[in-house]
Amino acid sequence: MQSKFVMSMSVAAFVAAAFAAPVSHAAPEKIIKIDGSSTVYPITEAVAEEYQKSTKTKVTVGISGTGGGFKKFCRGETDISNASRPILQKEIDDCKANGVQFIELPIAFDALTVVINPKNEFAKTMSVADLKKMWEPAAQGKIKTWKQVNPAWPDQPLKLFGAGADSGTFDYFTEAIVGKAKSSRGDFTASEDDNVLVNGVAGDVNAIGYFGYAYYDENKDKLRAAAIVEKAGSPAVLPSRESIENGTYQPLGRPIFIYVNATAAAFKPHVKGFVDYYLTKSKPLIEEVKYVPLPQKDQDAVIKHWKELKPGTGFGGVAEVGVKVEDLLSRIK
Image 1 (spheres, one colour):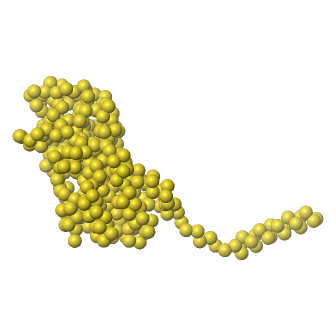
Image 2 (image 1 turned 120 degrees about the horizontal axis):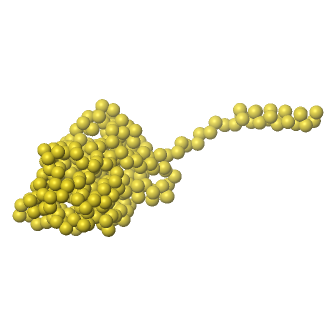
Image 3 (image 1 turned 30 degrees about the vertical axis):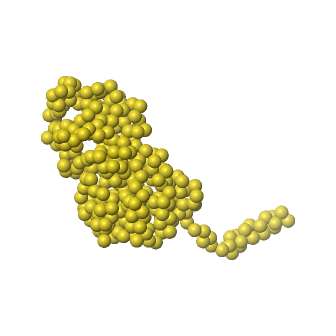
């Protein structure tokens, strides 16, 4: 009897204690949700790893491509969107329809790198005109060999690898080379995953592809970068930190961005803290993952722009080629 009494008293005491216990008001876990460009991903992922070490904030970084990232961002599903090209008018409209304001922040420079197989000895230099002939919509089903692009090149099959349609890299490349964003032949191997493109070009002597400089630098033991001639009479320029910084690698040098949900930035201290950290601590990480940091005067201008929490874009909904960071920021009033 005694044991039953003790047991029943214990249960009663447990139940009473449960009801009497104060409701937990533990703060929910702080999470920052980021998605978007595979080009910007290595930088943001490196910053996120370091930031998480020094704070109790969880940072998730996805790779949906710039276009896929903006779809989530403009629905209010993410706090920050990685972008390898500026936000387009349709995305601006989608954000506006959902009450999402954004702050546009250039964070580094990249160079779209045209790569060939290292055994390719004939196309080490190519012009923008050559690339346009390969990639323009009119080439579909017609331009099938290297010789059709340039009579000096061999009559070998042309194997094309490029960014997927949701990629900002695809938008920027087509704008810079063809003259209109998203204007491209469709009969090529497309992927949002740059590693697929790396392996495709590395595995076929007749292949050519393009992606961000960091992915080339990471794989230059199995790829060759082509030197680009912007227009007739211009020198052939290889992508490098120097040619990206001094603006001579044209038209494929470009700024890359993060876009911050302005509501999140203004009202979520952990988001603001992360962006503060990103803009002030990322330089060695940008260099580590083989991108080119902004010059200090540009970086200072971006930090000032961020502190003022100025929403909007300096591009007006179109992807411009060759715009300077200082000019870009001055357009946002």
